[in-house]
Length: 134
Length: 134
DNA sequence: TTCTTTTCTTGACTCATTCCAGAATATGGG
DNA sequence: CCCATATTCTGGAATGAGTCAAGAAAAGAA
Image (cartoon, rainbow over all chains, first blue to last red; front, side, top):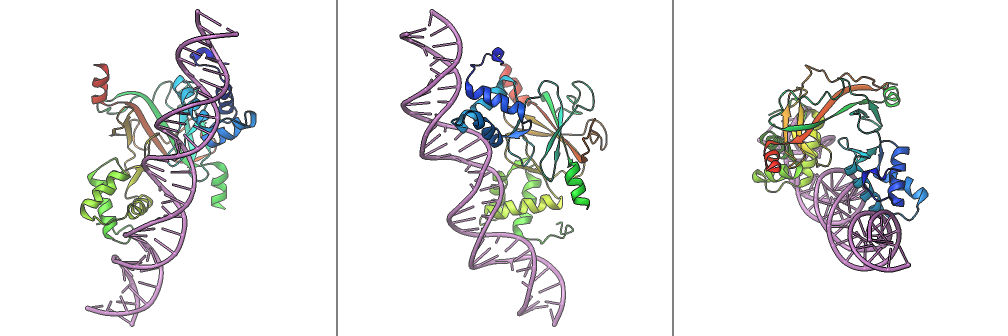
């Protein structure tokens, strides 16, 4: 796997990393369940620790739209964004609209040293959209 | 005040609305404390209810950057965004960079019916920036 | 293999937010 | 101005994601 990040390779970590890759945008609880398919004995704490560690190492990205619990995804390093369904909470990836590393330019940065721009599009997913208009 | 929104005008609601106007980007707890300066007896539940109601009515906007508790602001209807300090959590307003109702265009909307684009810039505020480089 | 350090397990705990049932109150009609 | 009624507020308990802490386990280096 990826011990390139100077991380110890432990069973829980491998399982967590695998689970995140297998279930993009999954919340912590889903990941815990997925991990326990392989290692029934892992504690939730180990999963939380692993997720934090992997996030710190940049192998995984944590996202948390308003009103949602933390979710994790494995697609990293390409500055993409998300669409979130207001009704069912489904999340989908969206490539950055404006260019490469674009959105990093705020009109007035108030003296902040900005290093990332996060974009969340809110709306209704196809399913909820049709369900609601019927 | 604004009963135009077809809301009952109750003391707690007026106090909450005033508090949100007085303390932009304040979290719920700060608002509760601010409200209790005037009405010492208000229950936290009343504040939560009022905030929800006001949010639903569009008189107040709820924002919740990753890893933060819910915060509320009164500047609404102008599609502005926020800069959040990674270190101290301070939030500042940023006018929309791309134009009027701009960011609403995702490169690929996956069939979602998008109605809002939310942008959060992450970085360090002036204070934390200088404190860290020293 | 053995040692040292990091990571996991277990279980208690925090704290924002929500749920509930009964009391209080704002609004509209009389 | 007063009352009826639906909405809102009070008070207190409950939920649930996430964190803390101490000792056991296991990964990596010698």
